[in-house]
Amino acid sequence: MEIVSGIASRMNWDFDSVHIVRGDKAKNAEMWPNLAADTSPDALLSTLREKIDDGRQLYIATNEQDTSFFDPLKDKYTTHFLDDFKDLWDENSEWYSETMQLNNKVPVEFDGYMRVAVDTEVFLRGKKQLETFNDLTNDCKDGINTCRMASS
Image (cartoon, rainbow, N blue to C red):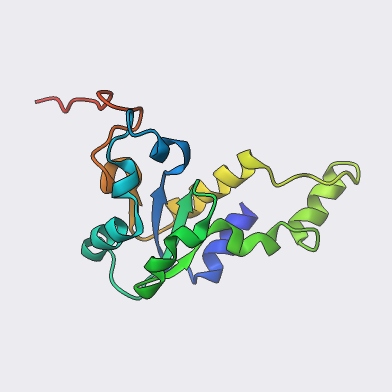
């Protein structure tokens, strides 16, 4: 949680956040027919324009390996990604030193689980929060025909 606080404080606790699922799901048009198009930079700019003011700091929690994919968003927002803050857990960080002491001097890897946990917690601290399957696409989170029907 110290890493989460460190990230949020570097953005002065004044940022909006967006969670963008891409990766394998965006490649599987049979299960998620709109996801790739709906999370393209042009589509994101169009969607975000209506929801987030220009010039805001925008934390992007994503599974997209190449964050340069989102470079077009830099024209409207100051974008931030988890790896922009990796000095908070690298070998020179307080977190690294503390976890080494707790783990009998054996380095603790900042692994996939920890990355997702920190990404999620930072996302939740955004003033406005937009999620892939609620705000950016009509595709269902678990694939085609799996969306929960709204009860009337």
